[in-house]
Image (cartoon, rainbow, N blue to C red; front, side, top):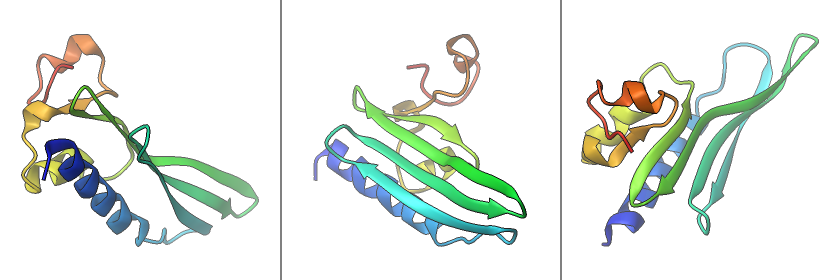
Length: 111
């Protein structure tokens, strides 16, 4: 299996697992959004918490230049850790939510 196809599969599996976790508060549903043609993957939260609207990404991942770019990660466990557990090298994972200057001090790819 080629590298990007393998990455797509793992990303989709991880997001699908997170989508099964229903928040304990409010009337909130989890919605998967996969754009395989453009390599954009998101897990959204939508619904209501009392009188307040809840809407936004819990996880947003892009594939760019044969690397996994985690644009946003609102999980406690950390999607990057889950990707590494699935055998993806940390040199292929970019924590895009960290500034380019700070990425050089972490364990993951700079870009």
